[in-house]
Image (cartoon, rainbow over the protein chains, first blue to last red):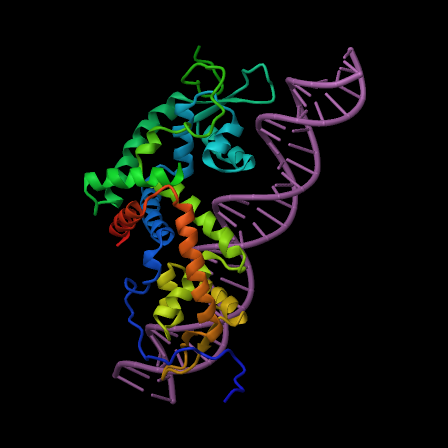
Length: 161
Length: 161
DNA sequence: CCGATTAGTTAATCTGCATAAAAATTCTGC
DNA sequence: GCAGAATTTTTATGCAGATTAACTAATCGG
């Protein structure tokens, strides 16, 4: 009986696993990382579907918001703020610029770098997007009270700050 | 004045944006989705580096934990629990099986499906992995007290349940 | 027994993301 | 002021993860 070719199963077949997808984990439920991943996935997907109406991805919305708060910043700064590599900032900005939402301006004494700004259209759209994002947030976290939302935000800030 | 070829910048160049990466956002800080994404990224990357010592990815660890809790489950069930598509479950299981951590057993009356089980080695390794994951969790959320961790977990469960 | 359905697999494709190298410009030491 | 190092952006390449479509094998319903 020790001549099994494959590793020996460690438990006997209990016939039917429950087909529901909710109680399939258990030891994982104690892990913050696991809960974070699942919650983030849900909220993110909700936002993706909402931004889809504008043909935008979350990172592009984030980029617009960062540019608004830091007009004239350089691409390398934007990349760092988005936690992406510079080459990705290029394609992201290309998209935003080709859609007329942001502009690269050669204005510094240093002619290697650009200053990045929102266009008027970008500013206008961003105002809408902020509302959309805020609402998406509320909807995706409908199970929470306003108080709990505030608690959650503060705890999350503590984690990544 | 209306003859600009590119979209008009909406703000004047304020010379130097602060190079720090911390205070680059602001309206984003009110969004739960944004905070979730950043916190999740941090905790996830921490776990990735810890599991790297075992040449495992987080999804593989999660799969092992799910198999342990649901011995004999079918691949389709596993895919649903992991929120991945069946073809991905195939490559994931191939890896686990080739490393001798899990086994597919044709045992059901239905000879199309497999029952999936942990091997002895898989059970042993999983015990270690759980400790590693729990510790990684603690380290990545070192800014929180035990109480705050419990609060955070409960809030996150409310969001994705 | 035969068509329709289901579980698993394979293959082709796509995407996001990272790394490396290239091009243009600025800075530094002498 | 000039050669070489450093910096900002861009281009090119490659890779891991994921999705889709098509294929095989087995079950189910009449």
